[in-house]
Length: 316
Image 1 (spheres, rainbow, N blue to C red):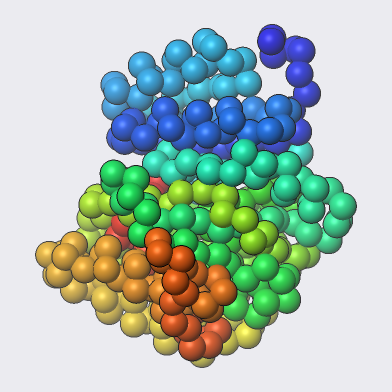
Image 2: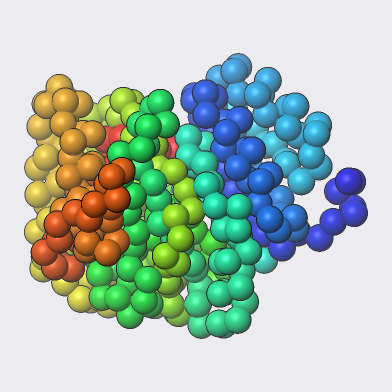
C-alpha cells in the first residue's frame, strides 16, 4: 500500500518522549483497528536515541504510519498541535505512547456516532487502569450523556484523552490545545468545544490507562496545579459548579506544594482513590467486576491528580 493508494479519514496522533518500552504495543493496537482509513502520526520530542529504532520498522512496514522527530521538545499542547498540523484526516484520535487501544472497533463505533450526529464534536469511552506490568487494577468510564458531560465538565475532565475522537475543524475553530498551559490542555480543549457543541462517551472500554512509577518533578507538578486553577477561572462562568471546582483546584495546588517524597509515595493510591471515589457505581468496576462507591457529581473533581502523579515526562 502506497501513501497515494488510501484515503485518510482519521488521523491518530501519538506523542512520545523518553519512554520507548510501550511503543510497540501502542502502535500495534492502532494497526489492529477494524477500519483501515487511518494514519498514525508519531511525534517524537527530544533526543532519546531509543525511540527511532522502535518506530522505523513500523514506518517501513505500513505507509499509514508517519514519524516526525523534533529534537527541541515542546509541551503537550505544542506537540499535539504540531501533529494535528501534519494530519490529513477530518477526525483526530489520540493515543498516549504508554497506553494501548483494547477494542478493535473503537474507531468504527466512534465514527458511527460522530458522523450521524453533527452536533457531537468529540466522542470518548472507558479505560482500563493497568500498572507497569499491564496488570489490571480497575475499569472506569466518563458520563455518556452530553448533558451530563456538560454538567460535570468544570468539576472533572469529561473525556479520557487516549480514548477520544474529535472533529479537527471544530478543534481548529476554538484554537486547538493551549500552548500557554503547563498541563491539562486536553481538559481546556473539551471545555472550549462544549461551548460550540456536545461531547459524549460510549460505554465500551477503549484503552488501557497505565499507572506506573514515573511522576513529574516538583516544578511540573506545581505548574500543572496552577493550570487547573487557570482553567477553572477561565471557563467558570460557562459551566456549573464553579465554586466547588475552584475550591478543589486550590486544594490540589496545596497538595502540589507538599514535599516530593510525600507525593511520590501517594500518587498511585491517590489515582486509584480518585477513580473509585469520583465516578458512579455504573461507571467504575475493579478487576473483580465489583462496583465502587460514589456520592455525587460534585465529588467528581480533582481532575488533575492522576495525570501528574502517574505519568512521566512533559507528554504525560
